[in-house]
Length: 212
View 1 (tube, rainbow, N blue to C red):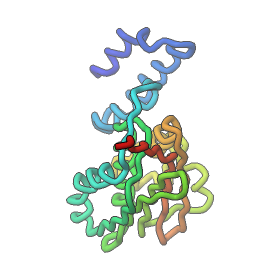
View 2: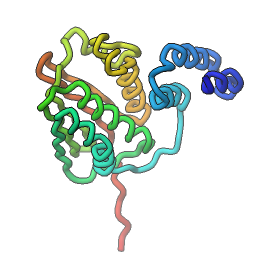
View 3: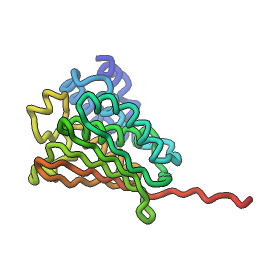
View 4: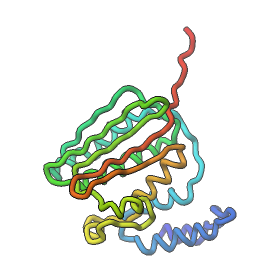
């Protein structure tokens, strides 16, 4: 409710060519998902309104380790083993909060849609001039006809399961937009009943060492 009031009062602050439309869209979707929790609402509003920020050089490996520390307990409760394969430094030029949210969302999904006794393999590596994050789960997988829709707003493969787990159908759409506004790409492959692989790629941003 407070967010809706703020948008009603301060909507002009976000006005651009499409400012009023964006505020109307935000308010409409907040009303639809008021029960989804403060974290979801904050991510949704930020994804739509925030266009630019201060990018900085962020190392992917420490960010992955921080996310895993946050979610390892939930994984253990669901009998999911997390495996890490982190190869070398992978510096990228991104919004630090975006990188954290991208990794957090993908790892959380890998736990949520996995099977008891399953594994979640998280890999970070250099591939030429790119930093690659690859998250592989042994979960329920996605039907072939649904893969091309996974990053669409409000799309849910299993609506009944999404309602039970509190899914809104916005998480992967937000992740894709965060990845792309930081100059990266994201793709997914999946086999129904076997699991899914999400791959995120950013350009490597190496800092040249100063001559001693």
